[in-house]
Length: 69
Image 1 (cartoon, rainbow, N blue to C red):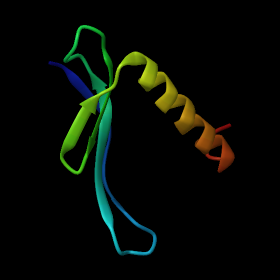
Image 2: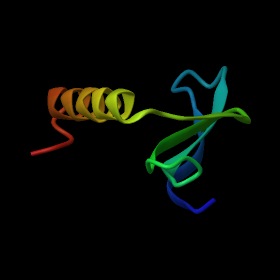
Image 3: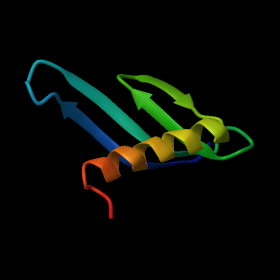
Image 4: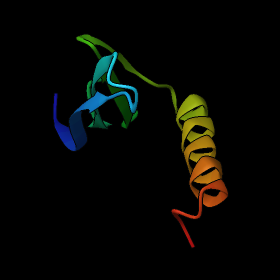
């Protein structure tokens, strides 16, 4: 299995009361390469349809906050 990590951080809540370990990237574990997520040690490899929805949602929230052009 090959993976490429695109994001790996411990994210702190703005209020300081919680943290989240988040990692995501590309995985070739299954026949069809896709996005994997690992949250607090639990991981999944998305099917391509879910990966497409995930990316669209991330782009939408990025546009909303002016983080993307």
